[in-house]
Image 1 (cartoon, chains in turn red, blue):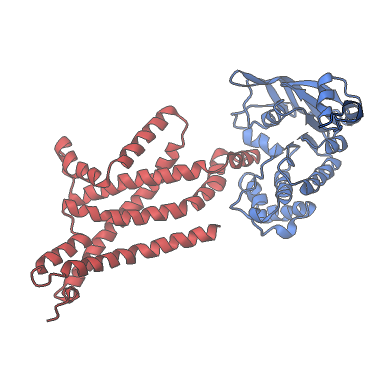
Image 2 (cartoon, rainbow over the protein chains, first blue to last red; image 1 turned 120 degrees about the vertical axis):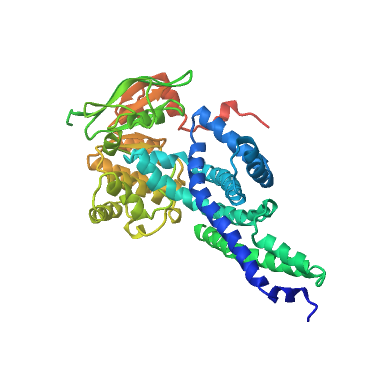
Length: 224
Length: 258
């Protein structure tokens, strides 16, 4: 038997298990991103409203979610909410809720920034052509907003994928947790297991996030 | 000249907080007439123009197009604005659309004209402003003067009855001013009703049927261009016109040795 930590990877079903863990990570990411993006767009539009109540509410939500570490938000949802309201959120549901709340706030702020960066005369020249508010938004403002929004939004997606790793702490077995289990099971036989398995996990995250950030770079270049 | 009043304001008042920007404006523009609004900066001429197509709400008074009042929040706003074209100082083309896309967007979306019909007319208008070859280009690839010519064509696509020009050459490099003003002079020659705010005095003199001089939110003087530029009646108009002529002040008798 080789004494390399890497060989554990091919023992039994270890590699398959890691891939299964990766699938859980991807699932969590996909669901959260798919829910956060539309909610974030709606939240971003809400944040641009001039009404004082809308401003205060959106400011509060954004600051609250921003200031709190995602881990604390996760614990509040998983341990706190169950205690306070008697809702028993599953670990998975808490994880999705945390990612969606955080993702929506971040996405909303990106959308708000993109919307207010559109110069006022774009609205005015559309209005002067007889376009209604709805037509102006759909035909003039939204396309420009999406153009400006794509790179930071994709960047947010990679941040969300990476943030899924903290759900380990409420017992969800995703790629990182699977890795820990493999390392723990082989710690005595292979002292270097941690280095190798975490190395592989690093590589798996890289494989997922790299194409996404490549896409962001390409889009960014195409817009300039 | 036909005496039909096309665009009219009655006792228009516009305030920003405590500042009265327009203080009882009565404007009558006849069909086919070219009216140039002059006045020192901050006198309210741009605000007046923006009130004419409802981009600014008015505090009192009313704007009438063909005798019909325009109300700022009415459902007929879109209808009214199609009849009143406007070109702004800032290059306001839509950056995500090509030149052709800019020109046909509103006809297709607002007037529900077919794409072919809109493109056929776009060809006529873009040729008229000399930019048909640029139809596939993006706004960022055009010079400021070219962009303003496209903006004029885009406004004309809606078949407006009146065109408003808000300092359309103020942000342009000097050598590009001419090409834009030429388009406007041609348009005036074709009988378009126009209200123009400009700082180009030579152009104002050439294009205007009538000059209206505004100061502190009121019309101070109304005159033909000849009369206004050669024999202004009011002191304020004289002072205003003097800012465009230059004298070397330190000439013989007052010269100071440094």
